[in-house]
Image 1 (tube, rainbow over the protein chains, first blue to last red):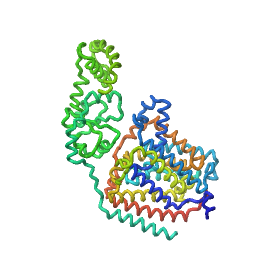
Image 2: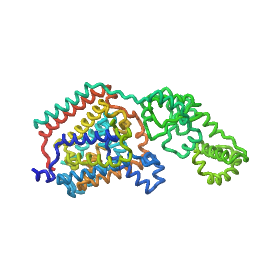
Image 3: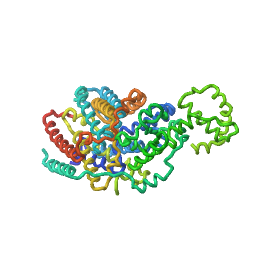
Image 4: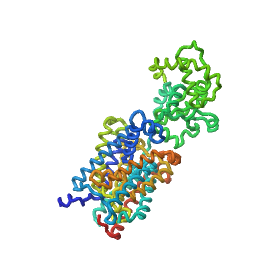
Length: 175
Length: 208
Length: 197
């Protein structure tokens, strides 16, 4: 049994995982008054990087300047630390269940290269979309659903609806 | 199918039924009458036209000017960068969104400061923070910033400096469409001010 | 202790980052242990061979939602102080559609891709790099989107208000719909040919 759990194929029961995730989300709301997030950390990294490389460009841009206030905005730092935690937490879980392995995961029908190109373009689109919608699956959809906000539920339906449509278009990438 | 899931289903339904039958929680964020009275007595909600102008010129992203006059008045003349929320729509949902933004200093203004103060009191009572009133309203702003009497050369440095600041701000907002004579006449004090500004940098910074 | 703790001043702001790290660890663990570090497992939801995303996502949403509603009811937490993402109609929908396309191509969303990075998935690393580039591109061409980005602001609108339901009724319906979907998912999984991943 124990061996079986460590060979990398064991995942916890999805409902247990969901309840764990829900409790984490609830704790986040209870402690900080805000939800979880992921894309926000990337955004603040990009803003900080652009500000460091080209300060005047960042201050003039209509978008970067929104996130550049005099006192380093705490929410953005918060998300960066949270995402660092996500990586640590994922690493812990990966260690326990024996999933640490450097590899490209893809359908046997496609090459590594094709998978990586698809991943890069997917990341690109997700980056753009998450800024438009003011949050990604975790920040806008999941956290929004927990407080029953309109933006959360509408964004969730838009993401999953369009993902269903596009996944059939890109079916060859997956199965 | 795993039999245990039936228990989970029942648990979820029971939790849901609990939510269904519980009365909706009311949240009252309004501040206490006593606190409101104290706040009304506190003149620190009034910001002067010069302070606001300075922040406008510096493009302070945390400043939001809110014009509480009617839309027609707003369209005929308004302070650059202001948004229009007439007093009668001060309780609209879109207003609540703006008022709830803790990162913005919300400054109300009207023609004088009566209507804007009313808007301030309504929002103060609703518990919103970082709200202010532009002292003297758009009239004072126009009279101090746009119409600007040239001080005599014998006036104290502070007065000339203030004049220079207002003049510069006016040009910043409305472009340099002044007559040539006005421009020439202030050429001399301009030089003097550049020097004095450095000397009195600290006090000028504190004042604005 | 009435929550939310930090906005209420129960926990000083200086603890913010420590709490963020701990919450992040919990978040990352829950995602990875449920299998969200594997793009092919995630994509199972869209092809019907593994509905783990659907199960975890909706279980988490209704768990957190119930927790918040009950704590609010008991007076342990002031739900009106919670941050509600403003709802900008067109940008939320457009952004969601773009993200869906990215989801279908990349097989991750930002949170899950970081989990993938943590266990050494190269595709997840490339996806995360793509995220940075995407956000950079968006910021650079922001003026093109500015009008859409700021249009149709409905503020922190609540879905139950928009539908004209009470909070309790909507939450109850959401739980029932979620349970229905879980059973439907199990049913579909049995019909669809298993995919090895």
